[in-house]
Image 1 (cartoon, rainbow, N blue to C red):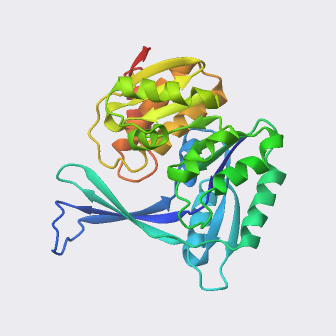
Image 2 (image 1 turned 90 degrees about the vertical axis):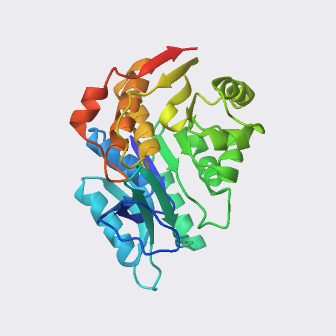
Length: 312
């Protein structure tokens, strides 16, 4: 069973403008509203891929209720702590898409800090409802928590159950969780540089960094290189993945789509190269999609077997 946890879910308000101008009124040509948060994005993408998942998280007020309702309408099983009685409100993120050159900028609210009892409720729920061998995606922003080590705390709580942790985090949340033995991490260039203490400019820099991370014995390390693809350690092998070219519209959810594709491949028992090809096609199709989650299935299918995958 795949489970996802979103500590700071949101509604994403996506604003499209022709060209951004500083110190001026920028008028949106259109706007869209969708569920935000990395864990929820993974659950939503998996649902579209035909993989059932269970989504855990926190929801507050009218926005929190809308997040939970949107997930359930998609057929996703939810296990959210919810409170609508005390004036607290889940956050809204604003994603500005500049159509002139396809760039995206996110302005994120901090979000609600859950009370200690609410956190304990959710940890108990995770411990009760996950089973040995389950996958648990710990992904995204945890800046609403004063404790930067909340992910490590969750991993320690579930260690005896041997839940496979798919960790997509940054900063102290990532660095201090490596000792807890995640099954997968997915750093980008900057996050990898912060982990290893040197700049990541070339593929050789990535390989040097992966060598430095070997002491943690993490089965899958997927290094995201944006439009340049990825370098992935998987199944004891190293792969350089170069994606097919697409006309990018919104790159905000591409990393979540790539992770969802990896989970799909693992759930289906695909070989490593098949998994990476599929994940890359899903991610590329997501880049051409206007929302921060989702993709065009026909485009995904046309992009299969178009990635260049080189075993290093």
